[in-house]
Image 1 (cartoon, helix red, strand yellow):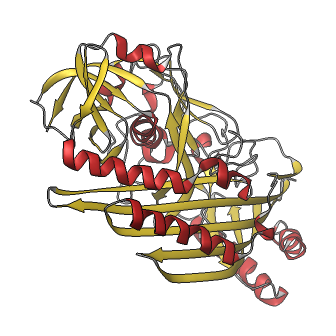
Image 2: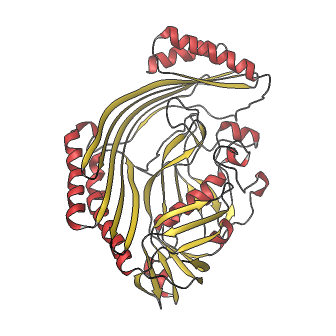
Image 3: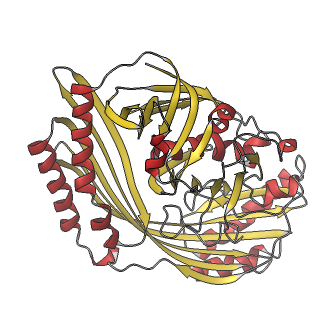
Length: 467
């Protein structure tokens, strides 16, 4: 792949003000099991080349899965022609950035390549058997997917980045039901690296435990009187709030209106840097460099180094997520947030691992000062408006708190509030830190990228809860 990419670059850079080639080859194995039946088991290799040209302010992109030079050359000529036509109606600029030459990878202790697919299927079967034997899970879906991605990014400015990225994701969806009702749960365990983390993450134990938690919620879950009370949220709730009400509205392309008819806009405007959005202890970051995170990368898809981005810092809107195009418009530098979901998509502004930085409290200390409230450990549903300001989270595993003690389960508590109210209500953040995998959707054509969400336990004071 690299050889044909270099040839395309040498040919294209002579015809454009800026030329970029991204070549990818990904080996994917996927197993899908539904109610004990292996519905799909596939292995495939997906590869192709993406090219972008900037000519007199006109930007265009083109994609091909061919490695035949005549066809690649034809694609180069075509994208140059498209860029020239685009220059009649646009004036795209890219921020000036340093160039890099590097190779990076993520270590595998138990390599994906060395695990036979029959063993992966047996893991799913073991989880299925325990669910059937030990729980009331009436619907059970499991998906195990791993991938090995080789990528080369070359630009006419001199950047040359190669990488090899292994990743794994395990997803489950279960419905537990009895004569009193039903509850459901979905989760995604995912990381970059090999199968050495499989035992550490203990998918079997997690899924079985969740099924039992759902059954207890059905049997014992109470409905409380709606009203204002204290709320403690677990890392899963912290994570979804970080992703939806901080990460998305901090994407510069949303702020500039590009995603308006696709995925929505943002309540944040360019002039709002420095405006307070939460309490002083709130620091929400997006960091692609968290080791083994799902969505980990050392350089983004424009060859810009990844770093931790402080989106909300000390409760204040601090910086946006940028690619080179949005950075140029707003007069700043890219902070390495350009990502494409595959070789046939353009790199746009995306999140990676978005979370709240841990605080100073032990988890137990958060509960000690709560006289009456709810502990929403996880969520079963979330909703947020198109500008990411009005939002709702419905609890899945949740408990009553009385006089500092966790009591019995409560069923489907709902918190519905604004982004500013949510983050301004946070008065204590614990030291713990947990993540879950997710697939973040955006753009047209659709791009689903790998991300982690998470954070520590947090306490919110005097928020309205309803049932």
